[in-house]
Length: 121
Image 1 (tube, one colour):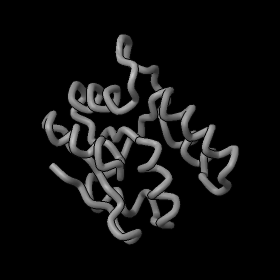
Image 2 (tube, one colour; image 1 turned 90 degrees about the vertical axis):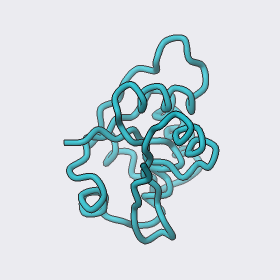
Image 3 (tube, one colour; image 1 turned 120 degrees about the vertical axis):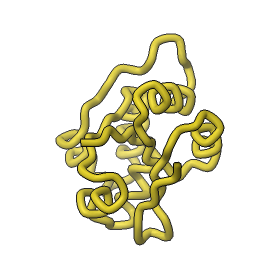
């Protein structure tokens, strides 16, 4: 299994696209082990109050929620730090986060045109 960090906008984009998580992930990375940091989980719960259909129960049943890294205050920086130290790609469509991941030598997985996932090294 390959660890994947899930970013808020990455999960929203995946759900919106209607892609099958298992089949699409297997095409780009193999069997995923999803990790969600506490800050991202809280962002998703806040979004779910106004937006239906985020499939949070599915995500919760399939992921491991982990504590935010100590001493880091911004979610993007937390994701970059964890991605770098664990060599886990991040599922995201956030342009600034993708730039930060690239500068740090990290991988990310993006939803492309609502029809496929792509791994960027």
